[in-house]
Amino acid sequence: MSVRTIDDRLRSEYFDLLPYIRQVADEAETEVRYLLIPVMRNLESHEKIVVKSRVKDCESAIGAIRRRPEYFKLDDPIVEPPSLRVLKDLAGVRILAFPKRRVIEIDEALRERFGDWTADPVPPIPGTANPLALKYHGFCSPQCPVQAEIQLISMLIGLFWEVEHGALYKPGERLREAEISEKMQKHYADVVRALGSFEEEFEAVATAESQITRKS
Image (spheres, rainbow, N blue to C red):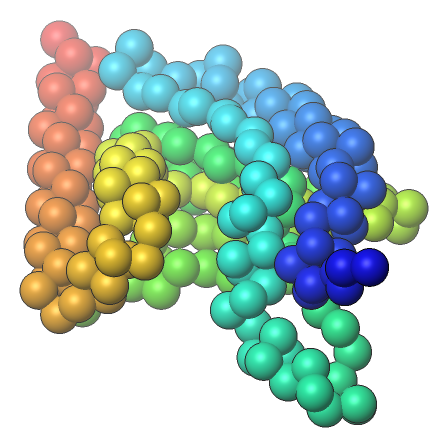
């Protein structure tokens, strides 16, 4: 009789939780869209807000558990076996906003509903002052067995992250080593700073044009 591995047990747990994960993703996205209706109504023609929900896939969830310290201490009888329930992002909602000043407005619109969730912002890179993204996670209701994560981010940075994640993270360990190399980190920071500079300049020009339009 074959012995079930830790990963086998985690896969079984994942598919037990999957209906709840999907439900939480749908619920969180629905609440976010409802709360953002006033913001959406006031968007100017060049402004955009995109709301996307996602469910973490099985292997990504197991990979996240493998990176936790307790995964490597299973020979210690005091350490509990890892569970996918500890992950804060099995279900997620990402909100992309252009221009980035809308991120703060969105955060204010969501704060009353999600203000008691745990904040976990993505820290700024060297040469920048503000967090790259605002994030918070928590349970949609006391009955929820899994948490959801909400992420608010500039659309330009968010789309760059999607490309970077698909190119460097998804292929596997060989390219993941390149992701954390000093050379790749430098180029990553250069791209983030360039995108931030573009947005700042665009917002300055758009504000100036709007003021001229009002005066004329």
